[in-house]
Image (cartoon, rainbow, N blue to C red; front, side):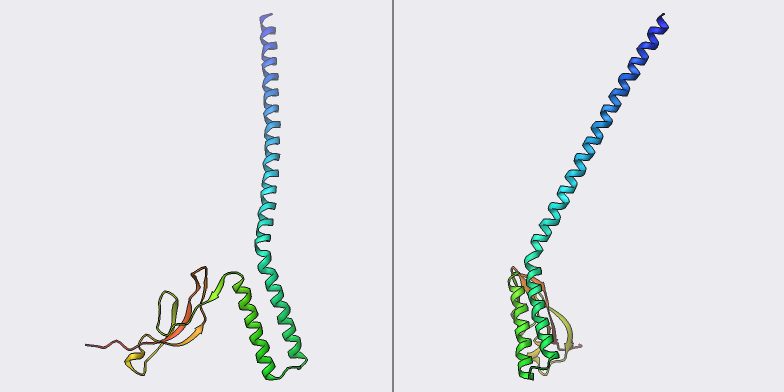
Length: 166
């Protein structure tokens, strides 16, 4: 009889263990669903945040795109004299600088003498006199700052005297 009682007790214990495992499994499934939903909500929040952050810049670029299309159509129709083409092209440059300005991106002031903090030497040419050493001969690419920090260094050609040999 004691064997039957032991078997019955073991069956109860096995049943309790099964119930416990099923309960934990259901809890894990519920927890996984909650995590999945949370991750999806975070992804949607992140995507919306990025979209909202980029939207003003993208709208500005679309306006600039419209201006470029207008300029191209005017050139195709040959409605412009060279003077009007030059003025219109300058307008496009000014409009693009305005897009940058709205993002706190400003062109650097050009300097006559080389400044390694804001300029990058692309080419060196010999000076015509010693006074020209380290002077900027030509600006190849304009530099830009954003919030008082260099965004892109100005690319320049400088006058550089050859080192004197002893």
